[in-house]
Amino acid sequence: MDSFEFNKIAGAVLGSVLVLLVVSNIGNTLVAPKPLEKPVYVVEGVETEGGEGAATAAAAPEADPPIETLLASASAEAGKKQFAKCASCHTIEKGGPAKVGPNLWGVIGAKHGHMEGFAYSDAIKNLSGANWDYAELYEFLRSPKDYAPGTKMGFAGLKKPEQRADLIAYLREQSDNPLPLP
Image 1 (tube, rainbow, N blue to C red):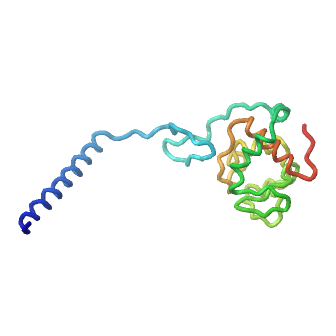
Image 2: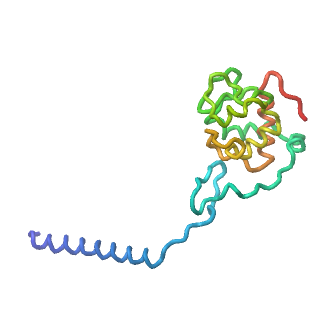
Image 3: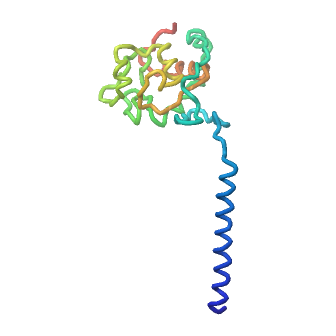
C-alpha cells in the first residue's frame, strides 16, 4: 500500500469521525436530557448528594412506630445481620479498637462521644451531655445527618423501623450490663 492510498483511508476515517462529532453535538443541542427529580433505583445505605434533581432532605419523614413497641418483637439475630453494614467502620468487641468510627461495645446507655481518644465530629461532641438511650439511637440510626447535622458519619441510615429496632436489640446485647428494656 503506497502513501497515497494510506492518506485516502486516513482522510476517510478522520472525516467520518468529524461528521459523527458534528451530528452528536447537533443532536445534544436539539434534545437536551431532563434530570430526574429523584433516583429511579435507590440503593439502601447510600446517600444522595445535594444538588439539582437530588432528593431533598426537607421532605417530612413518615411517623415511625415508637421504639418501645418495636423492641418487644425485635430480633437480636436479625440485628447482627444489620450490623454487617456497620462493621466496615465500627468494631463491637469489648475493648476493641476504633476504626473509621468508634467501637460500639456498651454504646446503649453510654454518653454521646463515649469512646475515649476517638476524634468525634463537633456535631457529636455538642451532644455529649446526653446518653444513647433507645429513643436517641433509634432516631440517630434513621438518619445520622438529620440527627446530628455536620456528623462525619457518611451512612445514610436505616429507613425501616424494624431494621433499626433489630440493630438496637443486637447492640443492647453487646454490653457487660445491658440497659433494661423500656
